[in-house]
Image (cartoon, rainbow, N blue to C red; front, side, top):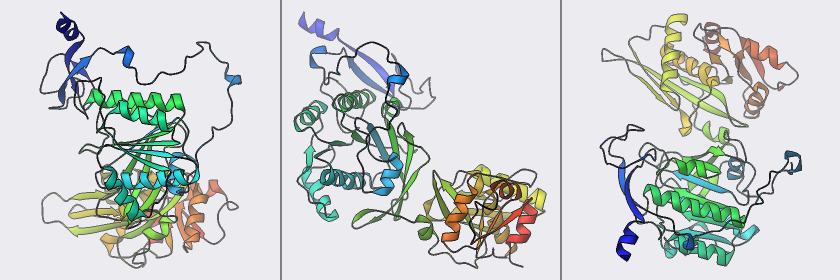
Amino acid sequence: MAAAKDSGKEKKQFVCSSCGATQLRWSGKCPECGEWNTLEEVVVRAPDKSRSLVALPAASGKPVPLSALAADDMPRLPLRIAELNRVLGGGIVPGSCVLVGGDPGIGKSTLLLQMAADIAQSTGPVLYVSAEESAHQIGRRATRLGIQTEHLLILSEIVVEAIVEQIEATRPTLVIVDSIQAIYSGNGASAAGTVSQVRDCAAALLRLAKAQNVPVFLVGHVTKEGAIAGPRVLEHMVDAVLQLEGERFHAFRLLRSVKNRFGSTNEVGVFQMSEQGMEEVRNPSELFLAERLPNANGSAIVVSMEGTRPLLVEVQALCSTTAFSMPRRTANGIDANRLLLLTAVLSKRVGMDLSDQDIFVNVVGGMSIDEPAADLAVACAIASGFRNRPVWADLVFVGEVGLSGELRSTGQLARRLHEAAKLGFTRALAPRSMVQRSGGDSLPAGIEVIGVRTLQEALERALVK
């Protein structure tokens, strides 16, 4: 009788690991998102109220006037890692839940361990929960990074109930869980990393963060496409999602904010992997241009905006006669469709015959530029490589290219040119309307701004004769 009663509390269903959709029968293709072989069988148990992990304080149930809410910014935990501080929006918000994703070996654990040591030394005790590595492995990594503090507590645990008990007992200032896919709840019947386990464990830690006003950082695995593994609802539950990008065997790492309820999602932090861990790059523009050849064909400098920070990045283009009937168009760091658009404009409006040319465009340093302000630099780099005429070494580019060959303005010209002037550039090529709207008073005095109307005119001023 008891067995029958217990079996009534359980039911089997199939959950899609890609979109989180559920259905009662298995099929090879998910009917919601269309992905193949993503349905996993899970056993769902009825929730046991007696084993509730975290009890939130009782709400008053009464609406609060907007005027009664405090308008001041909530206090944050400051970080001495300025690049991480910028991406988070000015520090760590108490009670927030942050998800950090990235490829294996990219440096997620190293960066969070350095952040934990920073908070432990300046603010209070930090609990670092490692579900994938032993405490001795974390200790060896800390020794390599030169971290020695008694306020950094290491816990090797995979059961979320035990993790919650330790958090309630130690009352830390910050909690780091590495990783959310490696822990599981004893209330669930499925294995760690499944859709239901990831959702339930994240919900338990999120409730604890809000109840005790302690920030929680969760490390998340990524799929082969680069998305956070697990249900999509995981990204909706947390307050911020940070993505650590970069090639595993290259030194530079870019930390981007995909979602942030407490700050901008346009900020980017630049780090460099070294033997001492993740070192922040205070002046990325100077580092990206350190190995540039000033008189090389097919090279142009674009002043791109990453959030509030202007970055000077080198764009390289190579044109080579194709050996196939269909020429190749390869883009690394820019949108491939944008490259096709600029190639068509150069062919139709400027008169460059690129029909038999393989075109390769690369953004140096592993950067990825999404804004249209890089169009002018990419087009000039392609023209420079095709005509074998270098771009003037002291010239930077800002501007969007239209389908008619006209140049269209973008924002924040003054801030871009101030950064270019600090690095020694003396001339800038920009759309004429953009220069007229900015005005001469706000532009830096040490750089000459050349306003042009069309792409044809820009190429005449940019390429060395």
